[in-house]
Length: 339
Image (tube, rainbow, N blue to C red; front, side):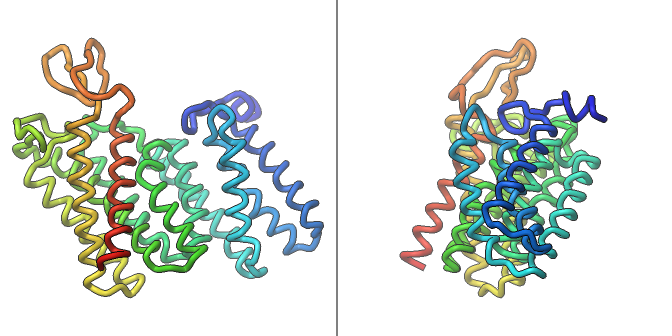
């Protein structure tokens, strides 16, 4: 065990980190919190246990000194959200943190997520609960469960080890940002935009997986040329209907959870569907694609393949987060000024 935790390193985002480093960071953050607040009561100690969680987890995803910015900023936001919790709320939160950790291990076991993906999901769960309590899990929870199950439909085309941290953040970081702003401002528009972000990811994931599984006629969204199902930029009737259904399902579920009007639910569904379409447009236009040795296009750099089109830095994860940011911000502007 000592050999594993001491020397085994994992790429959590872009850089290798060890669990020993995480433990050292967490213990240091805990004692700094303890002596800074000068509180040695039972509830004070529990508060410091909670305060140290997010900074230590955040550091795992830092890259070459970026933690000098991310850790202080996110720690300040975390402290702002958690510092006023009462004793019962802190105890509840820590029990839930243990549950989140157990669920993260379960997703690894089921190969829904990799180790880095499960750790990212744990980070997301901590922030979601603090910013929106139990209801905040509705949208990302539906997306995680359904998206993970759908991804198993196409094992030959998808990685069998599950989504990694990059994929978790690409599909969730925009929603998390708006949820944090909602927690601070309590303005409903930020909550709705957060749900729109998850709805975009849900629609895109449903469309991609069902489109590949059904193997229907697939066409490039820009050139309208026939293409292989599953290639970025492609659309099919089955995939588009699945994307609409996925967006509608998530919108209706959150309508029930937050008591939104049906009108708001329709707007969330429309935004999710538009996000899916924009994702395909950017995927066709900018995403790097390779020509394989058998002459087919592929999103992945297979053995013997060479670049055929697109930008070197623009992969599927880049397209996901860029389209999500674009449509979420557009929705925010339109909803605030015209709806």
